[in-house]
Length: 128
Image 1 (cartoon, helix red, strand yellow):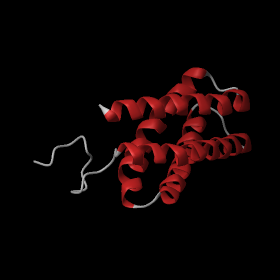
Image 2 (spheres, one colour):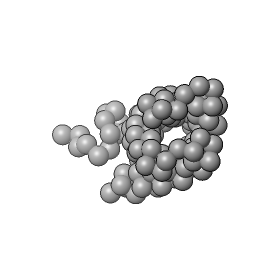
Image 3 (cartoon, one colour):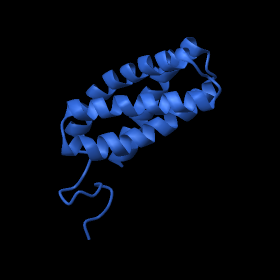
Image 4 (cartoon, helix red, strand yellow):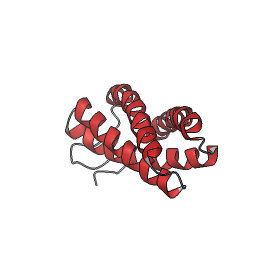
């Protein structure tokens, strides 16, 4: 149940932050921002928050989430028809904003002990 709560927090924050950057910055439709938020939220939660963060530290996990955010936003923005320097700059700004959020979100994750078991498997899996 803890994963549902953290995913909802991450999803809501990602949607709000990306809409604030991508909406006015590129004029991207809300539906496209929602799709990017869903993809980015799930992928970065699994990769950054459940795998990388427990095995490294907050700085490395935040940097990896920032790079992942840039790649996902840039590629999906290009798939939605936005191209050129404006997409790259906007993706960089959005990735920086997401990185700032992730730094504090990782502290929340660490306090809630959401992540990997000692065996290296996600906590939602049993150790049987």
